[in-house]
Every structure is written in structure tokens, then in C-alpha cells.
Length: 58
Image 1 (cartoon, helix red, strand yellow):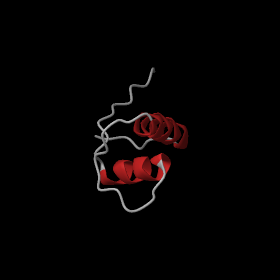
Image 2 (cartoon, one colour; image 1 turned 120 degrees about the horizontal axis):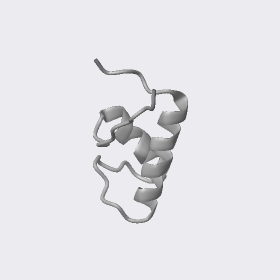
Image 3 (cartoon, one colour; image 1 turned 30 degrees about the horizontal axis):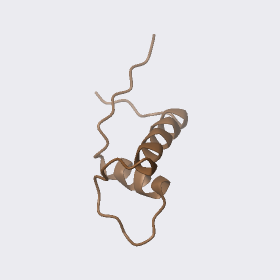
């Protein structure tokens, strides 16, 4: 069963991925025109191509 991510988890994931993209990491979606690293990270997240696992302490 997949749990929903909190807005804080989503923000952390997008911020980390946007930084990676800004530093030259390969992009996993087709870039459309003049997109910022954050916009690219959001599209990657929406398309489910960011390989990330969130582990929560209980």
C-alpha cells in the first residue's frame, strides 16, 4: 500500500531534484523550451520517473 506524501516531503524531493538538474544531472523527461530546473523536477515528479523512497520513523 502506497502512502500519500506530505507537502513537506514533496517540497524536499522537488528541491533536491531541481538542485541536481541545475548542477548538470541528466534530465529524465523531454525539456520543453526554456524551463527552469524546478519546472523540470515538477514534471519528473508528476510523471513518476524520480526514483525516490521516503522512509518515515514511527
